[in-house]
Length: 357
Ligand SMILES: *Cc1c(COP(=O)(O)O)cnc(C)c1O
Image 1 (tube, helix red, strand yellow):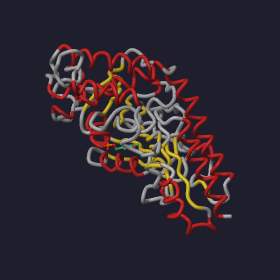
Image 2 (cartoon, helix red, strand yellow):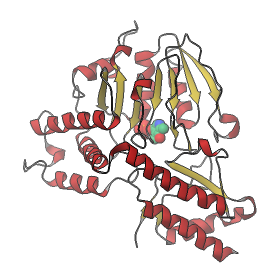
Image 3 (cartoon, protein in one colour):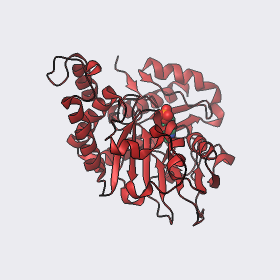
Image 4 (cartoon, helix red, strand yellow):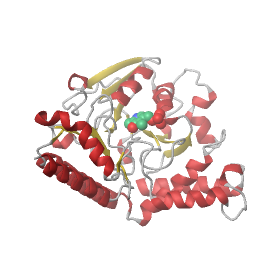
């Protein structure tokens, strides 16, 4: 039976990424060696790094003055690298979920953290609006897509201070105006590559402005100087990321991605609204993520949760269990998830409704 992969992360990748990476595991770039056993200083791996950086810049339309880095450590290491490099006195955090809250917690080790707004009062089911950023903070940190709760900021904010964004789970899902950001980071395992590699886009003039001693590995300038080869980068995930970027380009780039992502999200949200058994956990449609779609059983049908889970499994749906903090279901609809998979889930919800009424 066909499997429909709705995992939140690590998550579905384009089939071509998996196939090309599998080939490179056996014989990489005609070297007769596996990508797992070749020096990262070889000309073949350096070419992969250069091409990945170039395509990253091209697809996201990254202006002059920014550097693109590929590091280890995951997005969680960026929670501390960001304040290590940028936080002098005070920083502002918009707390829209579990990851945002973890990022703010790390920053507290480096300076004063001002939570300008939080949606914790309603289990993070909305994006706070109408907040103001104090003009004397070093930066504002936001999490554009809240993977656990299913809310998303799909606009590039205009703010009066440098803007830093965790885009782990929605990078490449839409065109982004990079010039509005001072720094963007993310783990690649949601929309780009297998786990193990982290991307950082940083405006170079943000760096070198504070007096703190920064340990070598934590200093962005170390990795800029070494073209992300100060230490051994995660070579295989880097190769896989390049295959995904090529796939993105071949499929029309980010405008085309956004169009399909909006269609997929509409298909599923419309069914959640229509189907009497289910309801969406995010009340305001403009806050709803197009990457992680969260829903629960409707009030009169709560006892059907396990039954629907089993039914969905029997139809090939994988990874739709909601995060433990929200319960219910979460369908992640990343770039690589085909529309047919969303349609299959919708059909499954319709069929279940018919059986139960
Ligand atoms: C998954 C995720 C993280 C954590 O990423 P790691 O690479 O596992 O550290 C951080 N932020 C967001 C928004 C995420 O979705």
